[in-house]
Amino acid sequence: MKYFVGSAVLTILFVIGLIAYQQGAFSKEKIAYDDEQVGLDDQIIINFSHVVAENTPKGMAAKKFAELVEEKSGGRIMVKVYPDGMLYSDYDELEALLDNEVQMIAPTTSKMTERLPSWQVLDLPFVIETNEQLKAVLTGELSGKLLEELSKLHIKGLTFWSNGFKQISSNQPIIRAEDFKGKQIRTMGSDIIKEQYRKLNAEPIPLNFDDVYYEIQNQLIDAQENTISNIYSKKFYTMENHITLSNHGIMAYAVMMNENFWNSLTEEDQQIIIESLEEMQEWQFELAERINGEFLEKLYKEPNVEIIQLNEQNKKQWMQSVSPLYEYFNQKVNGTYFNLLLQDIDKVEDF
Image 1 (cartoon, one colour):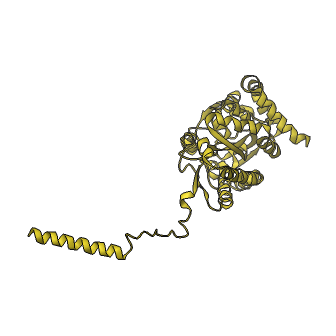
Image 2 (spheres, one colour):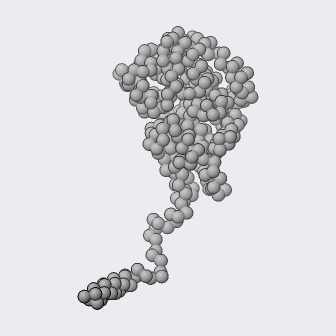
Image 3 (cartoon, helix red, strand yellow):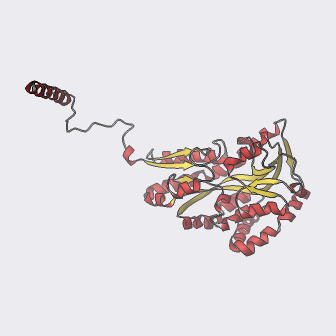
């Protein structure tokens, strides 16, 4: 009986071996990759996370950047874009970058002010007044200094993108400075922004971008500041249907990469990334202006939305209320950056 079982096992093993040999299982020749597999081992993946919609200036810029990098690298470098907080929220995307869970993010400059207080220079209200000035600031000497500061956090600063100017959406009209009194205003965490609303006798409520819709929907805030593209794409206007066109501040994004990941790239690959960003920079500024303009036109057509244009008299009231912030920043935070900001703006006026 044992002899029979042993013979049967040997026979089965012999048959399996013969079939495997015929099918080339033990062949020394390597199985060829198909065309789609060639070079996959050498492919570089850059995960780019952001928290806004794909049809906004940042969302469209991230997509354009990914296309340029893929084209310039011949598909060897792939930028995978994850919009709308798909991977990480507004609250935790910076930590994800520092941990190299993602390799690129582009947060608002205001989000960086807790770790880099000097970045509050871009939050000073009513200083930058035109798109030309905004472009000059985001590409001028000040912007270079700000990007260099990111190295303190082991982050590689690459460039700045624009989303234009901030406006006010509210559940009641806000026109005069006194209209802010007692209102709860959603802001980002920047001390300068919070103090701006305190000067207007409002209560700033720092909230992450992902939480704004819920807070408005449940009437936990009275108003919020944002760009038209964000107000429209996130449908804030469906609940806060009074929009004051104040242009009181700017919204810019700092495009950045994990420093260790950046250093792991060859000089050639680093240059591809830099060239892609440089090539699209003018396009990005024009895009931000155009998209905000197009979305504003759509808001004008919404029957339940009131668009309020801030006139010069009311603007002066706002400016007078917040004017102490300029001296505070100049004396207490970073006077050098404040002067650089004014110099970059003056270059536009001189031109």
